[in-house]
Length: 107
Image (cartoon, rainbow, N blue to C red):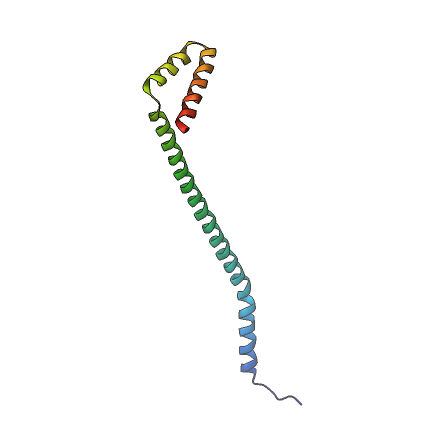
């Protein structure tokens, strides 16, 4: 025959079990929200980092373009501008002239 347990003990165990079961959904939701917040912060950190890398690449490309413009002689630039203003055919010739100048600059 089982021994009688004090009603105070059974009540305490029941209350603890009810407390754990009652708090489980709130704990699960809190963990889920914390995980989502962490994932979102990593996503935004990566987006900012990618934007910074793209800005550095854009700056480098702009610098190279300006260096190419400054390396061309002013007479060639003026001749290309004058030819570009006359007609469509001369615009195509100016583009070809510019391409030749860039090819010469590259070596």
